[in-house]
Amino acid sequence: MIGIAITTKDRTKVLQFTINQFKKYTTEDMCFVVVDDHSTETMLHQIFANSIGDYIYNDENLGVARTKNVCIKYLMSKGCDHIFLFDDDCFPVAENWHLPWVNSGEHHLNFCIDTHQNIIDRKENVIWWDGCLGCCMYFTRECIEKVGGYDKRYAKYGYEHYELTERIHRAGITPHARMSPIKLGAWSFDAQDSHKLFVWGRKSCLSKGVKDEGISENLKVHPVVMEDKTIFRDI
Image 1 (cartoon, rainbow, N blue to C red):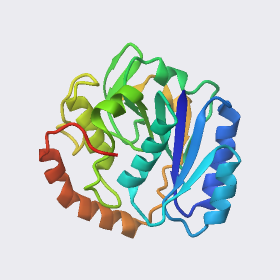
Image 2 (image 1 turned 90 degrees about the vertical axis):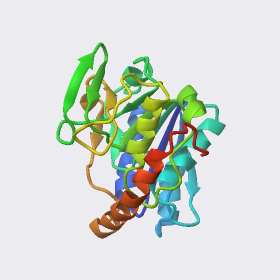
Image 3 (image 1 turned 30 degrees about the vertical axis):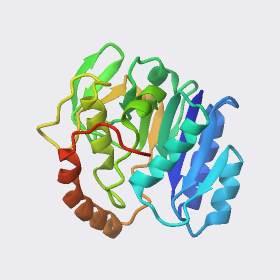
Image 4 (image 1 turned 135 degrees about the vertical axis):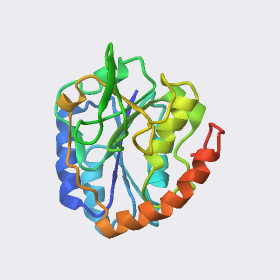
């Protein structure tokens, strides 16, 4: 079963638009949930979410890593074999958008675009990039069962996607486990022509001040987490 989770916070109009886009390109046999990281606009978010699936509200602001873990835990509990994690400004724009990812033969993929990363190589139906975005991420059930979820030592924002992708590489689940010499992050893998399948708004729900503070805090945590060579993290 395909599982889809959207994380959101205080972006009613953005969430409504994204959900309406998902309605065009999802089917009833897909599991869908919106996880709200402590919005003040709770009621409207819940109304929009319930129009397509389920709604989970965090009683406190957990930040990216822990909120994404809520998504993973929920979709795993529903028996999903293919897990897609979306930010609230990223959505599909094509029929059967999930098939290139599901049929890629890979257990973990990240949506990447050439304005943020550079293409390293192409092989069959997968592109190798020198960086990682977190707006749309794909995992198989087998992948999550082996590595768990995001490392909860990360605070509100920054580096959590890179660490999870690198840990998946290190577990031997994706090819060519190596760190990028260019960026502080893992080499990433994406399905061919993903730019034709999705649109990303490229605007975070976090203010610049909150993002800068989160990055500053997580920059201190990141080296410690990266030194931990164990594979599994509790969700």
